Length: 82
Image 1 (cartoon, rainbow, N blue to C red):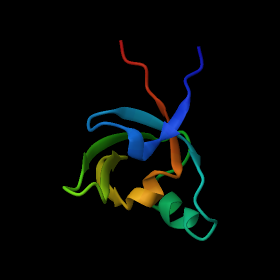
Image 2: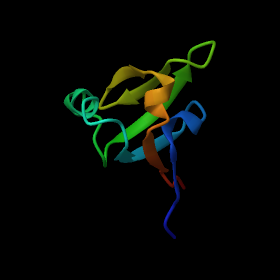
Image 3: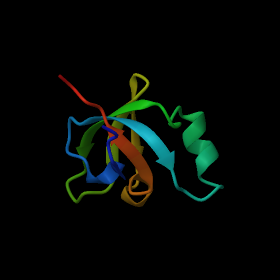
C-alpha cells in the first residue's frame, strides 16, 4: 500500500522518513542537494527549536538545521517499521 506524502515540518521528533520531493524554488535546491538532501535520502527529525523554527534533522550521519518554511516544502514518505 503506497504511503501518502507529508511535509517534513509536520513530523514528530524521532520520526524516520524518506525524502520524496523537494518543492523549493530552483535557487534553493542546489544548496540542499550539496548537503546530501535529495529524493530517496533517509532522514530523521531530531527536534524543533523552542518556538518551532528552525527544524533539526539527521541526514547522512550529521545534523542539519532548516527553516520551518523550507521544511514545509520538503515532502517525505514515512518509513514503515516493524
